[in-house]
Length: 65
Image 1 (spheres, rainbow, N blue to C red):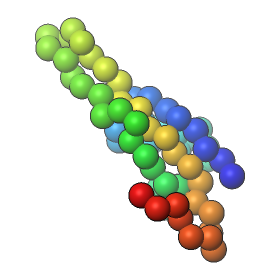
Image 2 (cartoon, helix red, strand yellow):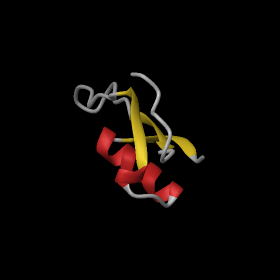
Image 3 (cartoon, one colour):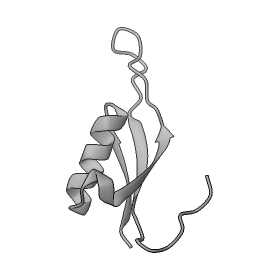
């Protein structure tokens, strides 16, 4: 099973980066947001969004939330 942690300016960009690296589509993975990220003030204090992306295991029940 493939899994990865990726960063990006936003959660959406972080997920897209992970999908490109894994070579999978959005419907083939489970996404857990590690950090939302923030835009900061006047360019100071910018934090990247971080996500953990894991390939779905078909036919097995997913872990409880």
